[in-house]
Amino acid sequence: MPTLYTLKEVNIRRTWFYLFGFVALILVLGWFLSYYFNDQALFSFALIFTAATTFVSYWFSDKIVLGMARAIPIEKKDNPELYRLVENLCLTAGLPLPKIYIIDDGSPNAFATGRDPSHSAIAVTTGLLNSLERRELEGVIAHELSHIGNHDTLLATIVVVLVGLVIRVVDLFFRSRWLGGGRDRKEERGGDILFLLGIVFLILAPIMAQLLRLAISRKREFLADASGALLTRYPDGLASALEKISQDPKRLMAASNATAHLYIINPFKGQNGVNWFTKLFMTHPPVEERINALREMSI
Image 1 (tube, rainbow, N blue to C red):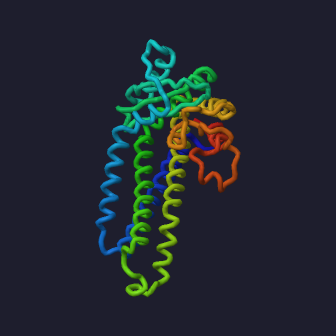
Image 2: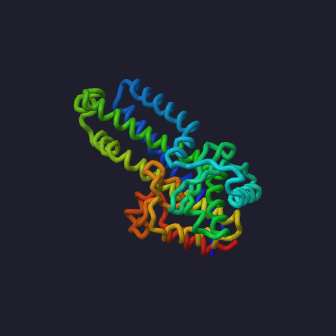
Image 3: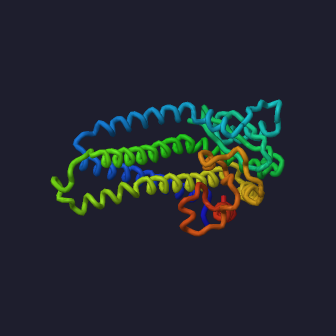
């Protein structure tokens, strides 16, 4: 039977595996482009643009996400019970107290954001507060604090930037190709098979990058589940909360495709029982798998 510690270690290793896959994808992409182009100035521009996007994402992504979710900041006097619950878990986890937000929506859900533990925030919906028992709510908050403690919000920003880099560079390549840029492969390379394989790789590279991003997102959810259960010492609390949230039919109105991956459960309902191919394109692992993993854990 897996323990909380071994499950956490497995998910950390898998996350690093996917990150190395991302690096390999970018290295192969860079090698092929250097093989094709004489002048790398266009790609220097793409890198500068990506760096600027990274800067904005790092410093302002939390404010943008909270604004999109229509989250309202609260103080201790507004909801003392929620505040005390978060404070106690932060003391146990050794984390600074994040800012706490409430989203006025009947659909139960929650997310965490922020560039680091000292600049973090947790947002919960009114539906979550109204539908969960204390031990269940504790499990959800512990899950979100684990995202903060595991630096998942920063990792998500890095991965999104890497995906953006791949997409922009591939797009730039094809624009240059149709505009007549690059070397004449028939004259210089004889139209070899390697070049044709490279073109196929460029077409598939953005899809591969997106699949890697989604795979990392799913593994971080498993990791946050394990870390959150370790924090509360009560895996069944989080498992029960996930069950209730997934069974609620209401869709979270403030959610969008850009922010769906942040929530503890996909805010777009009806996407849980799916086949293996559909799982590749999901932002979250199937809820049933998460619940089973939690209930099979031993502390």
